Structures are given as structure tokens and as C-alpha cells.
Image (cartoon, rainbow, N blue to C red; front, top):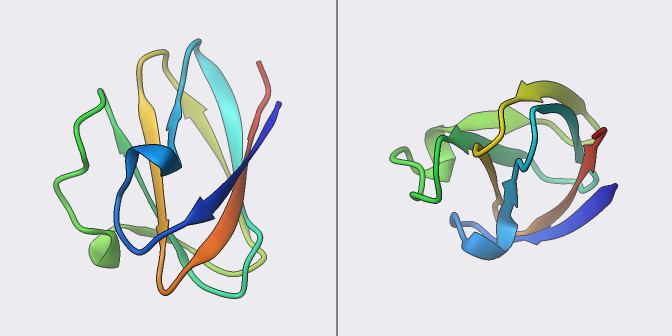
Amino acid sequence: MSTLYTLTPDWTATNRFEVVANSEVLICNTCAYDVRWSRTADTSVPLAPPAVSSILRPGDSLSLPLEAGQYIWLAALPFGTAVIEDFT
């Protein structure tokens, strides 16, 4: 299943992906801006701001093994888009 995100500069619940079962996902940066991402164990907003979080360059993808109950948060400055492919 593919989920498209229209990103904002800050962490928002709208740009949060919930992992419902142990799986592997592919995060794809589909825009011309750097996408920032973070993983949390629950719905709490990441402690680190997007500016210092993990980075995904334009056109790049990242495969991540995840456990049920984790969340992936996405942001981009000024704005951007990303896709998460869930292989479950």
C-alpha cells in the first residue's frame, strides 16, 4: 500500500505513518527538497525538531524495518512530498 504525504516544515499528525504490524517500509522523497524523518514508539511528537532529524535527499529512498506500534514522522522545508510504501 502506498501513502502520499504533502509535507509541512513541522511535525504534524497528518504527516505521521502508523506501523500496524511488524513490517518493512520504503520512504521515498518525491520532491525537490530535503525530507526530514523521525521514528517514535508512540504518538508523541519527536523530541528533536525536523531541522536536526534524519534526512532523505531529493529522489532518494530508504528501506526501514519497523515494529508494530511505531510511528514515522515526516517534514520538509519549505514544503514537499513523500511516499511511504508498506510491504505488509
